[in-house]
Length: 402
Image 1 (tube, one colour):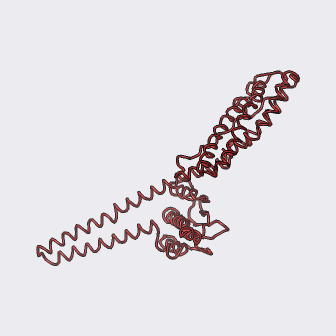
Image 2: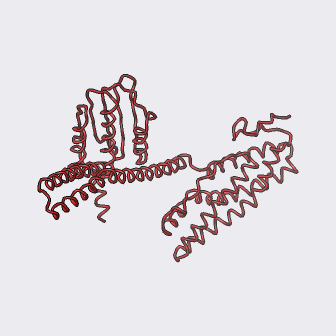
Image 3: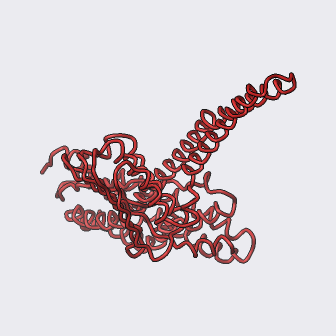
């Protein structure tokens, strides 16, 4: 009895099993080979696991104990890799490889050591190797005996035992989907934070170079010319005009520096909190804005700053693109989350993929485990909801003091 060629391949899915046959086809022989190899592999893994646990536990009383245990867990990762390869080749179990430990980016030696010691992949592999010895003995003896005594039903026996092996590999040697997803998100968020910080630094440098710095250069040149005219004894009217022009440049430079400082972190946010800061930014919007902030306490400075700049960016978009006649900003706390809702009665049509502004806000909030949702049908109204994790300001300040 034969089966389609794709029964054990990837055409119908990576983990589809071939039907059990009376005939000894190549799949059955692969399963038999895997079960016979279980004993030597299990003996080696059991000895390694026991040596690691006992030796590492005893030597933790010395300086070399924890580093040796960390190296042993890294070695267990390699054993798990070999076992996944064996199962993939002989059992057709396609298990994804876990993400490598970021040892190179782990900071100092202590951080790297702790990163290796708390590796769940290494500990699960040690558990796998520890419990495999009785099963390896059972499968080896059963299959070897059945080759001579129960060979007509050996394909069924091999299939049942191989399925147990498949379950063990998937249960203990496969990466956690949720953990892997979270690691990928954190790596992506870290890149977003780095790129955002670099872009902010470039913006500050550009604003200083093109604005206040250029005006201060003009001021220095004007004052230098006025000084030369005074030394030459020229008319007081010309000198007074130069000084007056320099005074105007000083006021413009000061205003640009204030705007730049407000763009970095407004003083009103530091001094009076989110409610007053949002009222201030709403007063500069070209559309009448009603601000409602219901916060029992002030959040951590980082969360407060992200909330402020999110609302500021959204109100700028309303001023430039919405065509609205009124808008509202609502901020409140719900359990351990800070919620922000900005609404306007404009033309609508705002989308996350419509430009870099909305997409940038979504990326910034995502980098701190926040959410950003845009509901803007054509014709309006537009409702933007942002959600941030709540972190208490006092707890953070106590942590910094300690």
